[in-house]
Length: 378
View 1 (cartoon, rainbow, N blue to C red):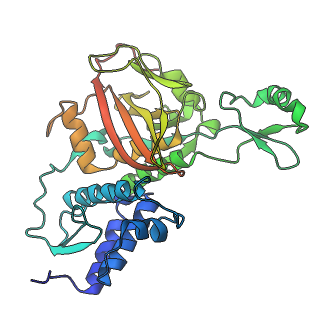
View 2 (cartoon, rainbow, N blue to C red; view 1 turned 90 degrees about the horizontal axis):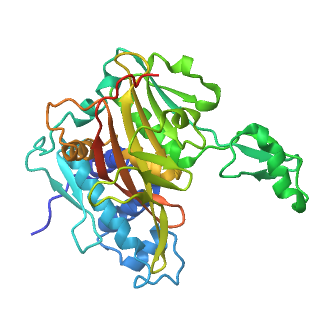
View 3 (spheres, helix red, strand yellow; view 1 turned 30 degrees about the horizontal axis):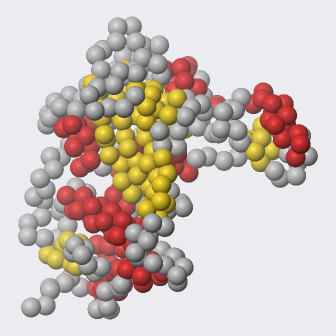
């Protein structure tokens, strides 16, 4: 018996909503694969793994699925994101879109009953309650990594140097190359940090909540004193993070995330790693999400800190997804209608694939609810 499908126009409108959803935000490679599968399925010609790799992912014609699992990894991530979309943002859709296990074809089916998601609504509203209350301004503070440039178009960055007064030190390192003289430059941003900022801004705007964005380079504590803050970056590049970090169990060091009070099953340090799965490059990085009271009564500070921009992107994006935040709060022991603690930390593990380090999965691997710290306000 033939599967009943919606009209072509309804299909396309549904696909557009799925691709523009928060689940697929910035997942450009996964979007290409999904669109390719939709196109092939419409023509009644589901593709082989090789065809997906070459035509959707741009792999060379020498692609070998036995040594490069990028197609299987990508399609698995698409399946998970589709399921999450229809459980949350798309819970009221009249039609569903899914990819059967073991197949590379897209199926449309009519929803049995719209709006019956098992995910309890309101997790995002509870997690971001201080920011959504409307009592204070909301500000996202991002970083501008310091580069040095000479008058011939050469740019140089030292991972450990973020002081504009260090140009002389940089010149000493490059003296033998004949480059320079150098001057400070702030021309580039971390793409992962920008994607995190965009995900958070989208969540706030879709919720009808105003939010500002500011560079930490041109902002002072006095400018931020009466606002809810979201701080992005690393303590190396964001001085606000550098001044706040220190009392909590997890802190971001220049080369790792240190756990100063490991619980059973936890490590003392968490370092990013890169490995090859056949010919597929895979990377694991970690980020720390910390919440504490803000500088004024009723305000909050949340920071997303890591040594890799994509880790910040993955952690921040997770915090915009209803189903993921619902699961996160349950892991913290914060059940429906319970207030989110004023102080907590989350350790996020972010998985990336391929040379572009595209985020395919982010999970909370550990959480701590912290006791109120007397006199903790600045």
